[in-house]
Amino acid sequence: MDLLDWHRGRLSSRRLAVLVRHLPQDSATLRELHGEAAEWSVSDYLLAAVVDQLAEANWMFATVNRDEDAEPLEYPKPVPRPGAAERTTGADAAAPPSGSPDPPPVRNPTATELAQFFS
Image (cartoon, rainbow, N blue to C red; front, side, top):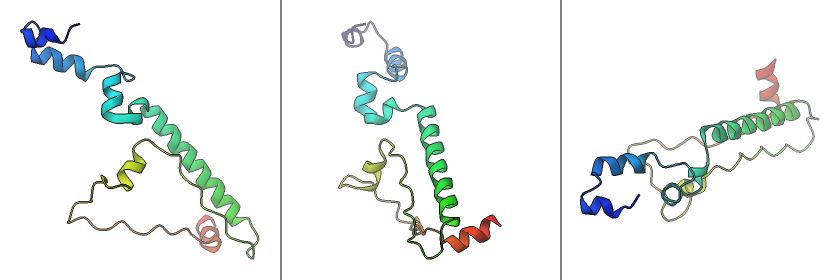
């Protein structure tokens, strides 16, 4: 398909929009628009969430069953997802809307809190 057909009037704007909208997931256009996120499917995001939850569950189990005098275990880091770094850092990071509340600070539960939760 020649994109000049749109300019020549042989390809309608609607047909061109439909063709662009239904490009394959691995197309150069989608990769340029969305970066690495274009390669991630819903299954990839779900699998990353499962891995994060499993790591968190293992951390909770190890925290509850460790010696109380031992050093606290480091909370597991989530699987990196495409676009996550761009949204949270950098000069181009979008600021939250002016009326939105600040997110609550992340606090890891203590071993005692976890034991009380699971008992």
